[in-house]
Length: 91
Image (cartoon, rainbow, N blue to C red; front, side, top):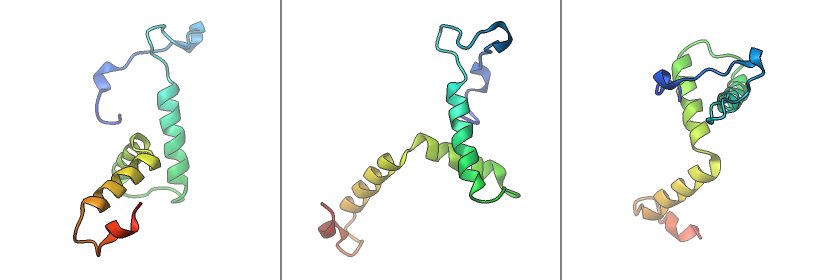
């Protein structure tokens, strides 16, 4: 989202009462991403170093919601034999 697709951007001209081009081009997606990112970064009271890395983490978290991450983690744990028999505790 942040570093890919920069050459595929389209404009939505709000001054002409255009809020969607009719071809699926609108700003709701990016507004949703920035809202998520601002809420996440506010927890740190501002980012002074490594902002691009924090932004990249926000992008990853935005694209991988918690339920999806939980499923992946459970799958990894079930497939691992070296984690103190954690498989026995999973449903």
